[in-house]
Length: 449
Picture 1: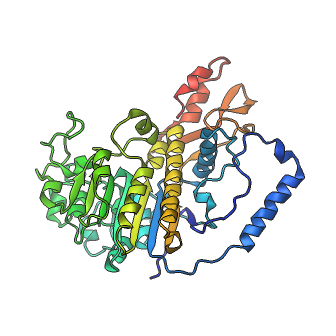
Picture 2 (picture 1 turned 90 degrees about the vertical axis):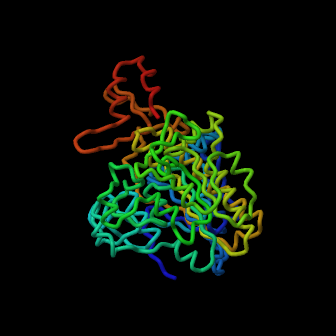
Picture 3 (picture 1 turned 180 degrees about the horizontal axis):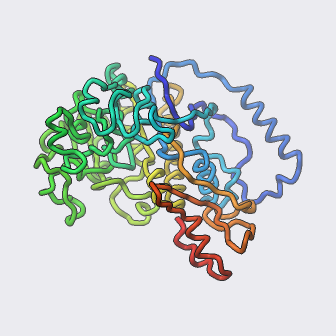
């Protein structure tokens, strides 16, 4: 089955047996020309000795780094190396150990700058569409229920289920958010996640549309595994959250979707996930936060009973390998995008690091189970962000710190994030530069990230 995948960054798995030298803590060895000649020789030998895997993939894993543009990958690579005590620039990430790399342009049919909804429809359904729409073709207009009624398109998840594969979705965002929902939902408005009376209301229902959460739980056949956030979208406003007693559900239709419709196991913390018997045939729905899951840096320091993306990835693969059916698994690092929107470069890069860790975890589990050669891993992004780094920083400079140049009496930050919404501009680099115009004010930059 041929599909067109529109994406920003694509890496398809073919393991490199011997990596060139990387992960250095100083660059003195790089002064010698022989070092670079040796690196080139090893790279060429790897390319010439590579054997093509001509098997048909039994298992497919699509890793989606939301908002993970080229600048994020580059800065994230440096960040990952520096976390390990290395210089950072020569670090080789898990995704960069794949043999095939490509670049592709991203756009929506009506917008030059795409969003995560229509791009998800592109790479999951093979159809480009209008901004803000999910699981529908270009005839559907954003927010117009009637225009979407005959515009539904199926997804790679549907195709996999028809071939008897197990299917699953993992995300650090809400399970009803734009990227994951394109695998199962059909709506002309990405904000119709819940029957909340504001974004989705009775008039939409009367026209024949359903909110995304409702579509998920009534889907037949059900999705075998779902792990992410967003549980408040499945509960009425009269229900208090199981973990945060001050929070309530978002639905005004007085329906508890999980209790009424979900035909499987429901969990809301990592302890319950770890206790789940792998290979159990019943579908599994895990919603670990009322909204999006926590940023990885916050999660790892909090001690909360919430799994990391790497742990969810390991769990899902080991679970699906208990069956001999093969599987399709969508794994989204959704909060890379959110951190960029929030102008928090530290969180964005740490989310990237954990996303890359999950890629490595998938490779290791598949290798340990002896099925790596029967598996296809694709790592991609849906769009980029207005994220940049520069400032002529010296080698090994903290990617979240200051550049080495003094320009116009302003400390130049290595990374900057600027998000423009309507006429309002939010920029960490600009804001911080204004604060730090005087010598001795470097503590003002602590808010970066």
